[in-house]
Image 1 (cartoon, one colour):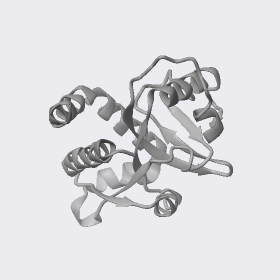
Image 2 (image 1 turned 90 degrees about the horizontal axis):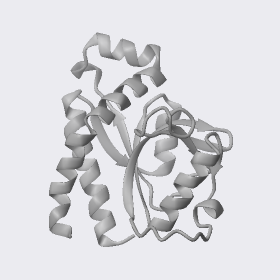
Image 3 (image 1 turned 180 degrees about the vertical axis):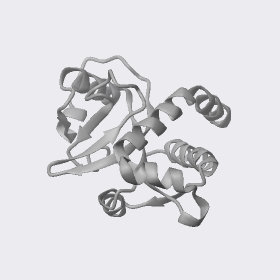
Length: 183
């Protein structure tokens, strides 16, 4: 990962902190083992990763052909004839630890992959993935929010994801401003 990639991750998580604070939520960058533990305890983890053009082509092609498939490192790094030189990052939410994979919620909508979800074999597939634990202090929350989260975790995540998807224009504009100096 280049210095620019590291700056992108840092800025994405800084931006996440801004939006999390709106909901009186907190975020902390953690290891992949800590992310697994957090998700198993019912807390979502925001994740950020970066792919080069060839990897993006393989990522998108794989999930368009195999919506419920499990992406492996071999598939991601497979040679292809793509002339795509566009590299970039993506933020997703780690929602579930399954027996043989990690399941994420993407913000591309319900028509992408498995109704907006995708699976990878393990965190090593996206070798530069970073994790942020999302949590709150009960003293800062409204009882109604806590109840919604505890009663239906996945629906809560999907609703919040839809909100973030709708506000992607604002987030993308902020990211563009932060990265203009990098170009």
